Length: 200
Image (cartoon, rainbow, N blue to C red; front, side):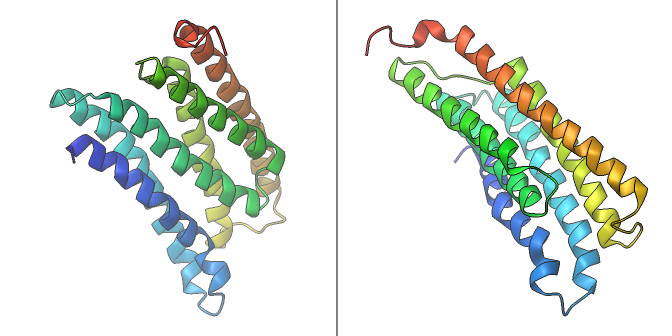
């Protein structure tokens, strides 16, 4: 396996580990220290996972290993990780389930478009709109996790006004994520409409 694809694979493997770390304090409440430990581990893991998104592209270009498979594998890994983090935040009541549902609709539709394009011999690579969406996802993830972390580290109480304000800002960011996800999807549709079959 090429080095670039190994970095991409790391992102996929990080997804279930993040889920386990996120809910570890809940499952093992008899060990209070896990609440603090989970903060550092999940933040470090997510930072590493997002770093692999940069490294896979860097190594692919540096070693001239840009392939059609990589163009598909990379966004697949992004979706795998992003939906996992979104799901964790839904279960912990930071993100309304309806927003995640529409994001899932978008991602499934985008995968369908990529499959159709592949049948036409075209591999859809990331576009600027998709990259902006991804950066917004990352900012939103870390902002929300900082709120959760401040509670787990007992820096702030759940009823604190800063927590309530933070959750409101987080909800706004999630809404922006939703808008950008569909804006980028429309951009992909417009840009790749020529590869879509005109007949059923």
